[in-house]
Length: 348
Image (cartoon, helix red, strand yellow):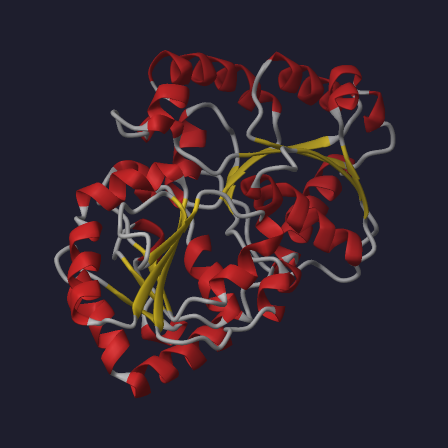
């Protein structure tokens, strides 16, 4: 596997002209394109988000040094990539999900699995040979992209918006367990029996409340607040109402391809966490403000957070300290180094 080296950008770093194509309405579009390039724009680079017409014509690529495309691999994306290469533009293609491993009997599989995945895989095999580097936030996905035809790959982690660090935990009565989870996490919820363990905790602690953002938990409405959708910009304030945040994952291939961004979102606000020892969370622990939890230990570990107030305060302080180092602005040099090296290699 041809891996590009990570590290801080070389000095001095020339001003680059960067263009990107991503879904600006989705959180992963922010994490994989808009956020990093916004941070690079703050460092003095020129950045342009491409619209549908730009993608269709390729004319907006004049004078561009690097094109970043997130996830799209249809005919329009292939045409954009080929147009960029014809103009001498370095191309980076990024993905942050392993669609080949979506579990059956889930809503995501209906949209992205089966024949839908086979069509996407065929399109991706056509596109990847035309890109300079394929990037992803996990080792599993970079390996998958290389198997699909990418000549060079690089793992680039996700980092949180600086706005998360500016948000702080909010004072409130009682104790709140929080979980921010997309609808695909219904599989994890069912597989790990999270509902039963939360119900047992609610029986033991009358002042306990649960806050669920995304997937519904089926808990009593007087003890559980469920918000199916919270705008990305409002998420830090919601997390600030948690006393402990959950990140449970079933041990399946799809989850091993995930990034650790959920824990980073929690800790950036200063909220301690409990997570499964799976994929992105393996290797994290008390130094990062949380604990890893075996499948059958969720009741015990959450209960420990509730009753041991001193340990909870210490975990919150460690979470805030580690989370404050995980912002996109502090880590944008990783993208900057990649883009600079690609431009210099093309010119050489």
